[in-house]
Length: 266
Ligand code: IPE
Ligand code: IPE
Ligand code: MG
Image (tube, rainbow, N blue to C red; front, top):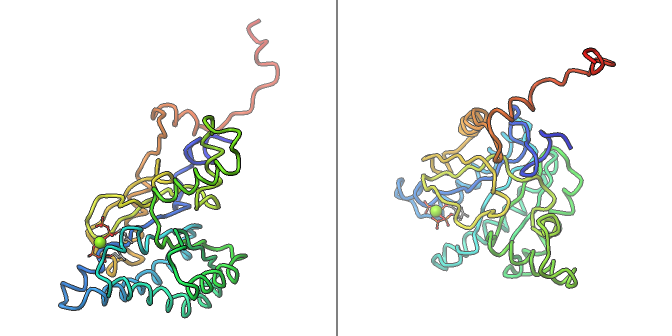
């Protein structure tokens, strides 16, 4: 593998657009509060923003968009808000999947789905199956997701699969059990809403992502805001522990060796 093709093991090229964008869609409640509306009205507008940003990702050539829709800690919210979010999830799956499918979007849901009811399981399975072969964009919704849950479930499954190797597992052996094993690691992480924290989102996978924080509230985030994040990303030098000088050398075009050049001064 060349120095510029993979993620944390090697150095991916920054490129025109990030291959994988991960977003914490935060600020729905504050957006609504500012307008004297109930918090849940912000979630409704948040879904509209997600629709627009998904479209923008397709048109920009981004291959993976992963969004945090409901964290494993969000069950702590008032029951009415949790219920509203669950119903919104169900209606989004009912209403959006055909459109996503037409636009070539593959849909994946990650998280601890065991807490969801049978109706939601059925909708998730059907949406994933229908869109499984689409290739323009993979949209991953993290629902009842927690980065610690993900690591633990991966470790537990790895132990189960290879008990004989306990005590000597490698990163490469763990990685296939993580819930986003089908995607490269995020290149660009965006959090709206002004907070600068991970809130238990993708802990393993964000190890070397570029972070971008904006005070825009999620319902305000759109294609132009995405472009601003991408512009910031393009300014970054991703070093993955190396020095700038090493990266410059690796980027120099490879000059084909002159035949017998090594004998010139012999
Ligand atoms: C993010 O917006 C959506 C979810 C967590 C489901 P919030 O609901 O957290 O909005 P704020 O942070 O309270 O404004
Ligand atoms: C993170 O937002 C989770 C989602 C956006 C789904 P929160 O609003 O729950 O995060 P904290 O509690 O402010 O860290
Ligand atoms: Mg919040």
